[in-house]
Length: 385
Image (cartoon, rainbow, N blue to C red):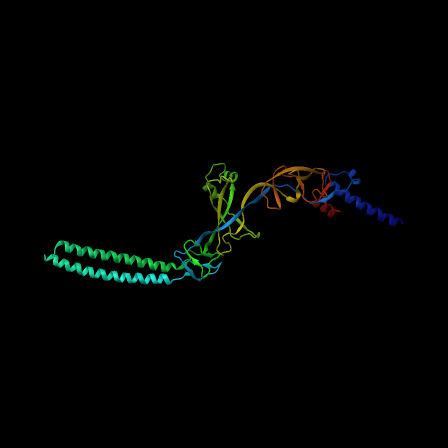
Protein backbone atom coordinates (compact mmCIF):
# COMPACT_ATOMS: atom_id res chain seq x y z
CA UNK A 1 0.00 0.00 0.00
CA UNK A 2 2.77 2.45 0.82
CA UNK A 3 4.48 1.60 -2.48
CA UNK A 4 1.30 2.53 -4.39
CA UNK A 5 1.07 5.85 -2.52
CA UNK A 6 4.67 6.62 -3.39
CA UNK A 7 4.04 6.14 -7.14
CA UNK A 8 0.95 8.39 -7.08
CA UNK A 9 2.79 11.19 -5.33
CA UNK A 10 5.60 10.93 -7.85
CA UNK A 11 3.13 11.46 -10.75
CA UNK A 12 1.65 14.48 -9.00
CA UNK A 13 5.09 16.01 -8.51
CA UNK A 14 5.96 15.48 -12.17
CA UNK A 15 2.78 17.24 -13.31
CA UNK A 16 3.28 20.07 -10.86
CA UNK A 17 6.91 20.41 -11.90
CA UNK A 18 6.02 20.66 -15.61
CA UNK A 19 3.39 23.33 -14.90
CA UNK A 20 5.92 25.23 -12.82
CA UNK A 21 8.43 25.18 -15.67
CA UNK A 22 5.85 26.36 -18.23
CA UNK A 23 4.73 29.22 -16.00
CA UNK A 24 8.18 30.27 -14.94
CA UNK A 25 9.30 30.38 -18.59
CA UNK A 26 7.09 33.46 -19.06
CA UNK A 27 7.90 35.11 -15.77
CA UNK A 28 5.04 33.43 -13.89
CA UNK A 29 5.04 32.93 -10.12
CA UNK A 30 4.30 29.95 -7.91
CA UNK A 31 0.90 31.45 -7.14
CA UNK A 32 -0.19 31.20 -10.81
CA UNK A 33 -0.17 27.40 -10.67
CA UNK A 34 -3.75 27.43 -9.43
CA UNK A 35 -4.93 29.67 -12.35
CA UNK A 36 -5.95 28.67 -15.87
CA UNK A 37 -3.05 27.06 -17.74
CA UNK A 38 -1.47 29.25 -20.45
CA UNK A 39 -2.43 28.76 -24.08
CA UNK A 40 0.42 27.28 -26.11
CA UNK A 41 0.60 29.05 -29.51
CA UNK A 42 3.14 30.05 -32.12
CA UNK A 43 4.80 33.44 -31.78
CA UNK A 44 7.45 35.45 -33.56
CA UNK A 45 10.00 37.93 -32.25
CA UNK A 46 10.20 41.01 -34.42
CA UNK A 47 13.52 41.41 -36.23
CA UNK A 48 14.07 43.91 -39.07
CA UNK A 49 14.64 42.33 -42.47
CA UNK A 50 14.72 43.15 -46.17
CA UNK A 51 11.28 42.84 -47.75
CA UNK A 52 10.40 42.84 -51.44
CA UNK A 53 6.83 43.85 -52.21
CA UNK A 54 5.26 43.43 -55.64
CA UNK A 55 2.79 46.15 -56.54
CA UNK A 56 0.38 44.81 -59.15
CA UNK A 57 -1.33 46.64 -62.00
CA UNK A 58 -3.92 45.18 -64.41
CA UNK A 59 -2.62 45.23 -67.97
CA UNK A 60 -3.81 44.80 -71.53
CA UNK A 61 -1.34 43.11 -73.85
CA UNK A 62 -0.91 44.24 -77.43
CA UNK A 63 1.42 43.11 -80.17
CA UNK A 64 4.34 45.29 -81.14
CA UNK A 65 2.38 46.07 -84.31
CA UNK A 66 -1.24 45.14 -85.01
CA UNK A 67 -1.71 45.72 -88.73
CA UNK A 68 -5.12 45.63 -90.41
CA UNK A 69 -4.84 43.78 -93.71
CA UNK A 70 -6.81 45.68 -96.37
CA UNK A 71 -6.66 44.96 -100.12
CA UNK A 72 -5.60 47.84 -102.36
CA UNK A 73 -7.98 46.76 -105.13
CA UNK A 74 -11.60 45.63 -105.16
CA UNK A 75 -12.75 42.19 -106.23
CA UNK A 76 -14.07 38.84 -105.08
CA UNK A 77 -11.87 36.67 -102.87
CA UNK A 78 -10.93 33.47 -104.71
CA UNK A 79 -8.52 31.93 -102.17
CA UNK A 80 -7.79 32.23 -98.45
CA UNK A 81 -4.22 30.97 -98.11
CA UNK A 82 -3.81 31.10 -94.30
CA UNK A 83 -5.79 30.19 -91.20
CA UNK A 84 -6.59 32.06 -88.02
CA UNK A 85 -3.78 31.96 -85.48
CA UNK A 86 -1.19 30.94 -88.09
CA UNK A 87 2.32 32.38 -87.80
CA UNK A 88 3.30 34.08 -91.07
CA UNK A 89 6.42 35.71 -92.50
CA UNK A 90 6.74 39.08 -94.18
CA UNK A 91 5.69 38.81 -97.85
CA UNK A 92 3.80 35.54 -97.40
CA UNK A 93 0.56 35.42 -99.49
CA UNK A 94 -2.61 35.64 -97.38
CA UNK A 95 -5.48 36.11 -99.86
CA UNK A 96 -6.04 36.04 -103.59
CA UNK A 97 -8.58 38.30 -105.31
CA UNK A 98 -10.07 37.46 -108.72
CA UNK A 99 -7.32 38.35 -111.22
CA UNK A 100 -9.26 38.20 -114.52
CA UNK A 101 -9.95 41.90 -114.82
CA UNK A 102 -6.42 42.84 -113.75
CA UNK A 103 -4.78 40.42 -116.18
CA UNK A 104 -6.95 41.85 -118.96
CA UNK A 105 -5.89 45.36 -117.98
CA UNK A 106 -2.24 44.34 -118.21
CA UNK A 107 -2.68 42.90 -121.69
CA UNK A 108 -4.50 46.05 -122.81
CA UNK A 109 -1.75 48.24 -121.40
CA UNK A 110 0.93 46.15 -123.11
CA UNK A 111 -0.89 46.55 -126.44
CA UNK A 112 -1.10 50.30 -125.91
CA UNK A 113 2.64 50.41 -125.32
CA UNK A 114 3.24 48.51 -128.55
CA UNK A 115 1.09 50.98 -130.47
CA UNK A 116 2.82 53.93 -128.85
CA UNK A 117 6.23 52.52 -129.76
CA UNK A 118 5.11 52.22 -133.37
CA UNK A 119 3.86 55.78 -133.41
CA UNK A 120 7.14 57.01 -131.96
CA UNK A 121 9.11 55.12 -134.60
CA UNK A 122 6.94 56.55 -137.39
CA UNK A 123 7.17 60.09 -135.99
CA UNK A 124 10.95 59.76 -135.70
CA UNK A 125 11.29 58.71 -139.36
CA UNK A 126 9.19 61.66 -140.42
CA UNK A 127 11.15 64.07 -138.24
CA UNK A 128 14.50 62.78 -139.51
CA UNK A 129 13.33 63.15 -143.12
CA UNK A 130 12.04 66.68 -142.50
CA UNK A 131 15.33 67.61 -140.91
CA UNK A 132 17.25 66.50 -144.03
CA UNK A 133 14.96 68.44 -146.28
CA UNK A 134 15.13 71.51 -144.03
CA UNK A 135 18.92 71.45 -144.05
CA UNK A 136 18.84 71.45 -147.88
CA UNK A 137 16.39 74.37 -147.88
CA UNK A 138 13.66 72.39 -149.53
CA UNK A 139 11.02 72.80 -146.76
CA UNK A 140 10.21 75.61 -144.46
CA UNK A 141 11.11 75.93 -140.82
CA UNK A 142 7.42 75.59 -139.91
CA UNK A 143 7.11 72.22 -141.58
CA UNK A 144 10.30 70.99 -139.89
CA UNK A 145 9.17 72.13 -136.42
CA UNK A 146 5.75 70.52 -136.93
CA UNK A 147 7.43 67.16 -137.53
CA UNK A 148 9.56 67.60 -134.36
CA UNK A 149 6.46 68.38 -132.28
CA UNK A 150 4.70 65.29 -133.65
CA UNK A 151 7.70 63.20 -132.46
CA UNK A 152 7.52 64.78 -129.00
CA UNK A 153 3.79 64.01 -128.81
CA UNK A 154 4.41 60.38 -129.80
CA UNK A 155 7.07 60.05 -127.07
CA UNK A 156 4.63 61.53 -124.53
CA UNK A 157 1.97 59.01 -125.55
CA UNK A 158 4.54 56.23 -125.14
CA UNK A 159 5.29 57.50 -121.64
CA UNK A 160 1.60 57.45 -120.77
CA UNK A 161 1.24 53.94 -122.13
CA UNK A 162 4.23 52.73 -120.09
CA UNK A 163 2.80 54.35 -116.92
CA UNK A 164 -0.56 52.65 -117.55
CA UNK A 165 1.24 49.33 -117.96
CA UNK A 166 3.08 49.81 -114.66
CA UNK A 167 -0.19 50.65 -112.94
CA UNK A 168 -1.94 47.63 -114.46
CA UNK A 169 0.85 45.30 -113.38
CA UNK A 170 0.80 46.83 -109.89
CA UNK A 171 -2.94 46.25 -109.61
CA UNK A 172 -2.41 42.67 -110.71
CA UNK A 173 0.17 42.21 -107.95
CA UNK A 174 -2.30 43.73 -105.45
CA UNK A 175 -4.68 40.92 -106.29
CA UNK A 176 -2.42 38.75 -104.11
CA UNK A 177 -2.61 40.17 -100.57
CA UNK A 178 0.62 39.49 -98.66
CA UNK A 179 1.71 39.88 -95.02
CA UNK A 180 3.39 43.26 -94.40
CA UNK A 181 5.46 41.86 -91.51
CA UNK A 182 6.12 38.76 -89.46
CA UNK A 183 3.30 37.99 -87.07
CA UNK A 184 0.23 35.99 -86.19
CA UNK A 185 -2.99 36.03 -88.22
CA UNK A 186 -6.10 37.21 -86.41
CA UNK A 187 -9.72 36.39 -87.18
CA UNK A 188 -10.76 36.05 -90.84
CA UNK A 189 -14.39 37.18 -91.23
CA UNK A 190 -14.36 37.19 -95.06
CA UNK A 191 -13.90 33.93 -96.94
CA UNK A 192 -13.94 32.77 -100.59
CA UNK A 193 -16.65 34.49 -102.59
CA UNK A 194 -16.79 37.59 -100.39
CA UNK A 195 -16.35 40.97 -102.01
CA UNK A 196 -13.18 42.68 -100.82
CA UNK A 197 -12.41 46.37 -101.07
CA UNK A 198 -9.88 48.82 -99.61
CA UNK A 199 -12.43 49.76 -96.95
CA UNK A 200 -12.70 46.12 -95.75
CA UNK A 201 -10.21 44.66 -93.24
CA UNK A 202 -9.69 41.05 -94.26
CA UNK A 203 -7.77 40.16 -91.08
CA UNK A 204 -5.11 41.46 -88.70
CA UNK A 205 -1.45 40.45 -88.53
CA UNK A 206 0.07 41.01 -85.10
CA UNK A 207 3.84 41.31 -84.82
CA UNK A 208 4.31 39.47 -81.52
CA UNK A 209 8.11 39.20 -81.46
CA UNK A 210 7.80 41.65 -78.57
CA UNK A 211 4.58 42.60 -76.80
CA UNK A 212 3.51 45.75 -75.02
CA UNK A 213 1.76 45.59 -71.65
CA UNK A 214 -0.28 48.75 -71.04
CA UNK A 215 -1.33 49.86 -67.54
CA UNK A 216 -1.84 53.09 -65.59
CA UNK A 217 -0.17 55.13 -62.85
CA UNK A 218 -2.26 57.59 -60.87
CA UNK A 219 -1.03 61.12 -60.28
CA UNK A 220 0.48 60.28 -56.89
CA UNK A 221 2.43 57.37 -58.32
CA UNK A 222 3.79 59.56 -61.12
CA UNK A 223 4.99 62.11 -58.56
CA UNK A 224 6.57 59.35 -56.45
CA UNK A 225 8.23 57.96 -59.57
CA UNK A 226 10.00 61.28 -60.20
CA UNK A 227 10.84 61.59 -56.49
CA UNK A 228 8.81 64.74 -56.15
CA UNK A 229 10.12 66.21 -59.39
CA UNK A 230 13.82 65.89 -58.53
CA UNK A 231 14.41 63.74 -61.62
CA UNK A 232 12.87 63.46 -65.04
CA UNK A 233 10.52 60.70 -66.14
CA UNK A 234 13.19 59.28 -68.46
CA UNK A 235 15.69 59.14 -65.60
CA UNK A 236 13.12 57.48 -63.35
CA UNK A 237 12.22 54.92 -66.02
CA UNK A 238 15.88 54.08 -66.62
CA UNK A 239 16.37 53.20 -62.94
CA UNK A 240 13.18 51.16 -62.55
CA UNK A 241 13.72 47.43 -61.86
CA UNK A 242 12.63 44.69 -64.21
CA UNK A 243 8.96 43.80 -63.96
CA UNK A 244 7.13 40.47 -63.96
CA UNK A 245 3.99 39.53 -65.86
CA UNK A 246 1.28 37.40 -64.24
CA UNK A 247 -0.99 35.85 -66.84
CA UNK A 248 -4.76 35.67 -66.53
CA UNK A 249 -4.58 32.12 -65.12
CA UNK A 250 -2.19 33.19 -62.36
CA UNK A 251 0.89 31.67 -64.01
CA UNK A 252 4.01 33.83 -63.98
CA UNK A 253 5.44 34.55 -67.44
CA UNK A 254 9.03 33.25 -67.40
CA UNK A 255 10.67 36.26 -69.11
CA UNK A 256 11.15 39.61 -67.39
CA UNK A 257 10.02 42.90 -68.90
CA UNK A 258 11.06 46.51 -68.68
CA UNK A 259 9.01 49.69 -68.34
CA UNK A 260 9.77 51.68 -71.48
CA UNK A 261 7.46 54.71 -71.48
CA UNK A 262 5.22 56.78 -69.24
CA UNK A 263 2.94 59.29 -70.94
CA UNK A 264 3.72 62.87 -70.06
CA UNK A 265 0.06 63.90 -69.95
CA UNK A 266 -2.49 62.78 -67.37
CA UNK A 267 -5.91 61.75 -68.61
CA UNK A 268 -8.31 64.50 -67.54
CA UNK A 269 -11.13 61.97 -67.00
CA UNK A 270 -9.22 59.38 -64.95
CA UNK A 271 -6.28 61.40 -63.61
CA UNK A 272 -3.89 58.65 -64.69
CA UNK A 273 -0.89 58.29 -66.98
CA UNK A 274 -0.52 55.42 -69.43
CA UNK A 275 2.53 53.23 -68.81
CA UNK A 276 3.97 50.75 -71.28
CA UNK A 277 6.20 47.79 -70.44
CA UNK A 278 7.80 45.66 -73.12
CA UNK A 279 8.24 41.89 -72.83
CA UNK A 280 10.12 39.55 -75.20
CA UNK A 281 7.87 36.95 -76.78
CA UNK A 282 10.28 34.56 -78.45
CA UNK A 283 7.99 31.55 -78.06
CA UNK A 284 4.84 33.44 -79.20
CA UNK A 285 3.15 32.52 -75.92
CA UNK A 286 1.65 35.99 -75.51
CA UNK A 287 -1.06 37.15 -77.90
CA UNK A 288 -2.45 40.56 -78.64
CA UNK A 289 -5.61 41.22 -76.62
CA UNK A 290 -4.57 39.10 -73.63
CA UNK A 291 -4.86 40.42 -70.08
CA UNK A 292 -2.93 39.92 -66.86
CA UNK A 293 -1.07 41.84 -64.16
CA UNK A 294 2.31 43.55 -64.13
CA UNK A 295 4.19 43.17 -60.84
CA UNK A 296 6.65 45.97 -60.01
CA UNK A 297 9.03 45.02 -57.16
CA UNK A 298 9.60 47.44 -54.30
CA UNK A 299 12.50 46.72 -51.92
CA UNK A 300 12.22 47.88 -48.29
CA UNK A 301 15.21 47.65 -45.93
CA UNK A 302 14.80 47.22 -42.15
CA UNK A 303 11.20 46.15 -42.68
CA UNK A 304 9.01 44.67 -39.96
CA UNK A 305 7.19 41.71 -41.49
CA UNK A 306 4.39 39.72 -39.84
CA UNK A 307 2.05 37.00 -41.13
CA UNK A 308 -1.38 38.23 -42.13
CA UNK A 309 -2.95 35.61 -39.86
CA UNK A 310 -1.35 37.41 -36.87
CA UNK A 311 -3.72 40.37 -37.33
CA UNK A 312 -7.38 41.00 -36.67
CA UNK A 313 -9.53 43.95 -37.62
CA UNK A 314 -11.78 46.26 -35.62
CA UNK A 315 -13.53 49.16 -37.35
CA UNK A 316 -11.13 49.16 -40.30
CA UNK A 317 -8.08 49.16 -38.03
CA UNK A 318 -5.70 46.26 -37.74
CA UNK A 319 -4.43 44.91 -34.43
CA UNK A 320 -2.00 42.26 -33.20
CA UNK A 321 -1.52 40.61 -29.82
CA UNK A 322 1.78 41.37 -28.11
CA UNK A 323 3.13 39.40 -25.17
CA UNK A 324 4.29 41.42 -22.19
CA UNK A 325 6.94 40.29 -19.70
CA UNK A 326 4.34 38.12 -17.97
CA UNK A 327 3.36 36.46 -21.27
CA UNK A 328 -0.08 38.08 -21.18
CA UNK A 329 -1.58 38.99 -24.57
CA UNK A 330 -2.29 42.69 -25.07
CA UNK A 331 -3.78 44.21 -28.20
CA UNK A 332 -1.68 46.62 -30.22
CA UNK A 333 -2.89 48.69 -33.23
CA UNK A 334 -0.60 48.58 -36.26
CA UNK A 335 -0.36 50.38 -39.58
CA UNK A 336 0.54 48.28 -42.59
CA UNK A 337 1.86 48.96 -46.06
CA UNK A 338 -1.08 48.75 -48.51
CA UNK A 339 0.98 46.49 -50.79
CA UNK A 340 1.01 42.83 -49.77
CA UNK A 341 1.63 39.42 -51.26
CA UNK A 342 -1.48 37.87 -49.71
CA UNK A 343 0.53 36.10 -47.00
CA UNK A 344 2.47 38.73 -45.06
CA UNK A 345 2.17 42.39 -44.08
CA UNK A 346 4.91 44.99 -43.83
CA UNK A 347 4.20 47.02 -40.68
CA UNK A 348 4.97 50.72 -40.96
CA UNK A 349 4.11 51.65 -37.36
CA UNK A 350 2.99 50.04 -34.10
CA UNK A 351 5.76 47.45 -33.69
CA UNK A 352 9.44 47.59 -32.87
CA UNK A 353 12.30 45.09 -32.89
CA UNK A 354 12.13 42.66 -29.97
CA UNK A 355 8.33 42.64 -29.69
CA UNK A 356 6.79 39.17 -29.41
CA UNK A 357 3.69 38.76 -31.60
CA UNK A 358 1.15 35.94 -31.44
CA UNK A 359 0.77 34.34 -34.87
CA UNK A 360 -1.95 31.72 -34.36
CA UNK A 361 -5.29 31.48 -32.61
CA UNK A 362 -5.75 35.24 -32.81
CA UNK A 363 -9.27 36.11 -31.68
CA UNK A 364 -10.07 32.42 -31.12
CA UNK A 365 -7.90 30.85 -28.44
CA UNK A 366 -5.99 34.07 -27.73
CA UNK A 367 -7.82 37.19 -26.62
CA UNK A 368 -7.07 40.31 -24.63
CA UNK A 369 -5.52 39.28 -21.31
CA UNK A 370 -4.96 35.62 -22.26
CA UNK A 371 -1.98 33.93 -20.68
CA UNK A 372 0.22 32.56 -23.43
CA UNK A 373 3.15 30.19 -23.60
CA UNK A 374 5.15 30.44 -26.83
CA UNK A 375 5.24 27.05 -28.51
CA UNK A 376 9.02 26.98 -28.72
CA UNK A 377 9.35 27.54 -24.95
CA UNK A 378 6.77 24.85 -24.26
CA UNK A 379 8.78 22.39 -26.32
CA UNK A 380 12.01 23.41 -24.55
CA UNK A 381 10.36 22.95 -21.15
CA UNK A 382 9.01 19.53 -22.10
CA UNK A 383 12.41 18.43 -23.38
CA UNK A 384 14.05 19.66 -20.19
CA UNK A 385 11.53 17.73 -18.04
